[in-house]
Each structure stands twice: as C-alpha cells, then as structure tokens.
Image (tube, rainbow over all chains, first blue to last red; front, top):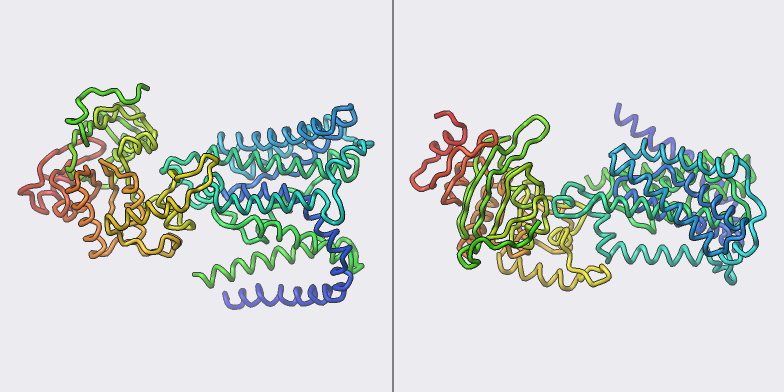
Length: 312
Length: 254
C-alpha cells in the first residue's frame, strides 16, 4: 500500500515535470534572452524585501498572512501622502512606518496574546485590508508624481535601484545571519524555543523584531509597486503573503523553524517568478500559471521529503 | 529590587546558598510548599524524590529560570532577582537542564554560549574568543566534547550531556545545579559525569544534584535532601545510608 502510494507520489509529478521541462526547452531561447532575464530579476527584486521578512518569521516557526494587505496599505498611504504634497522621503517613511506598525499588531496578537499565527495574522490581514479600503473608499489612487518613481526605481543600466537594493539586502542578511547575535538567536529560538528561553533569551522580543521587519519588508514592496505603476490599489497584493511563504518553502526552509537561508528563499521567489514567466512565454492560457506554481511547490516539498528520508 | 545587599561578611559567605520559604504552584498542583535549605561551597547535595516531587522546580527557581510565588534565594549574601537567569549567572550560579536545553540544529560552539555570546559593541559574535574560551574549558575539565563545529543533533547522548555541562562550566560557577545529569546515559557515560562532578566539588564548586537514583546519590553526594509533593521531608547525611534506606526515604513507605 505504502509502496504504491510512494510510486504515485513520485511518478505522477515526474510525468508532469517531464512535460514542464519540454515546455521550458521549447521556450528556452526566449527565456534566456537578456531582456527576459533582466525582467525576471527585476520582478523578483521588487518582492525580495517581503521574502526576507517572511524568512525571518519562518525561522521562528511563524508566518504573517497580513503581509499582502500590509503592502497594499503602505502603497495607499505613500500614494495619498505624495498626492497631498508630502515630500518623497517623508511619504516613503510614513508608509514604511505603517508597515512596521502592522507587523507589531500581528506580533501583539500572536506572541503576546498567544493566538495561533494562522488566526492572529488573519485578523490583522482583514484589519489592514479594511483600513486600505476605508482610506481610499475602495478606489485606486492614481497620478502619483514622477518624483517617487525617480527616487525609488532610478539607477543606471540593468542595475536599477530595486535590483541593487535586493542584492545589498540579501548579502547583508546572509552576513548577519552567520555573524550577528540577533540573527543567530532567531535560529536558536526557532530550533528550540524552550532551550532559548531557559538560557535567558527573550523569545517574545525576537518575535517582535521578526514581525516588525516583515511588516517593513512588505511595506517596502508596496512603495516600490506604487513607484512602478504611479498608482496604488487597496486591493493589490492578494497573494504576496502566501507566495512569500511558498518561496521560502521552495528555498528549503522548514515551517517548524530554526533552519534555512535567505538566499534559498530569494531563489525560491526567482523560481516562482520564472514559472509564471515561462507559462507566459509558452503562449498558453494565462490560467496555467497557477498550475505551474502548484507543480513547483509540489516538487519542492517532495524533494524535502526525500531529503528527510535520506538523512533519517 | 536592591541588588547585592550584603548581610554576611563576603569571605564567610563564599559559595553559601540560602533558600528561604519557597512556594511555587502551577494551576492545580503545588510544586514547592514552603521549602528552605542552606548549603555550603564544595558540598554535593542530592535533591531526591519521585516524579513531581518538586526537584526540578526548586533548581529552576534557584537558577532564575522561573520566579517563585513567594520566598527568596540568597547566594553569597546577595539576594537574587527572582526569575532572572542572567542575574543568577552573574552571581556564579549555573544550571544544567534535564533535557540539556540544547538547540539541535546549532553547532556545539553556539550551544555552549547560548544566551551569553561574547559580542562586539555592535552585536557581532566574537568567534575567536568563543573558540578560545570553549577550548580552555574543555581542556580544563576533560569533557568528552568532539569538534566545536559539529551539530548537536549529530552527537551521542553522553556528548550532548557534556555540552550542557560545559555550557554551565563556562560561567565558572561557584554553585552548579544539575537536573538528572545522567538520565538516559550508559553506565560508562554516567561514571564520566559523576567523576567530573566530584572533581568540580574538590575544586570548591557547590553542587545541587537532582536525581531519583539511589546509586547516583551514594556515588556523588555527601548529603541528601528528600522532597515529596513539594515538601522537604528529610535532610540527612549520606554516610551510613544504604541503597534501600534511600529508596524508602524517597518513596515514603517506611
């Protein structure tokens, strides 16, 4: 019975993967063109701050479903402030601060009141989305001045600001996660919260740091999106939180916490963005995108299972 | 809370522990019921009793891992802040937890310094310093700890216990609290740990040892304190006691 189950679990995705690879090979020249690679890197870079935030949360065995709503609210705040004539840097600061506060709200529910993350962050998700809809009366805010776009998305050649920012962020996090006490403690508290607490580590405080940084990361994504489209929708980013979690899982993180690396998570997001891109390049119906994502996730999880078998 | 109120001359008080009227209860059970105890430096005191007798709770209160409902702990004439691990550590009290309180995914080196890493002013780990301190400690106490870079999950049970003990020793404690340090170990590994404890005691370290094994009490301790349902029942010298005497004292079936 279990052998049959195992067979199905392996053979079925393999067959689908074979078709997938065939599709990739067909569109490979277009996929590998310089313009397309830059595009993929660019779209991934725009999401990196949120992926890094989710990585910090997953290290502690947590996640925040409200990150998408958080990004939308930040985008709206930034757009509204800009339209009202607030200077660029102050508008960005306001949006990012709101993102941090949103993260702290999740932290209060999950870490202080000890509501499970699934429920607690669902509450903040609804609250933040509701706020975004309220302040905009449900309408898209347009006509965001060019100055925001110039400031946020400027840069020269292919190394535009978002890509540069994503690279610097990733390298810093990689370095900090090896050498800095705060980041090492995120790993320790995620690996064994009881042991960390017994040794005097403030686990609740660490959760506050992770939730706040994730909120700030999501808000940064919101600001960059506003700069890119020069508008902000209160309904934007419906899938940001879940896709960030998916990216981390593809990147080899364990939802129980304590393991994983930021680079893997960013590569995970690169794979997700590439999958959508490949479906688009193949010229098939856009509705295939989600199936492609499902396949990528399934393969990632199965690889994780195989790895566990091997090490056991 | 006034930190460091000296009530006795420091020299007389070295390694002297006073536990006074500790009470700690969880929702429905009383874990410690008005427990008082005094111990001196280089004394090995076994805290014996069955499951749920309050042994672990007592050590956790002394080490600052949990705060008591009432009562206090005084070490070397200083009243300790209740529920404050780092305060107890800075006064020279370190604890080895029953499960080791180890992070399986982290290296031996990181586990040794868990919660007390030496860092630069900006919070970066001083890895060289950590390595040096760890090597010195392992050398000094001859602990069976393999490579510092090994992950704790790859170590044997005895090696993991050694890492947990090594972490406590890094603080150069004058009072060492051990919660079932030899449980789930083979006989040889048990003997290694006991030998380490006796050496520490000779060097002037006071030891409180939680255990339910009469053999361990006879091998390591000079004095035995028996807890039953949170109450201190017996406080006696181990001299002249037999295995069965101890078993009777612990079970309460005289």
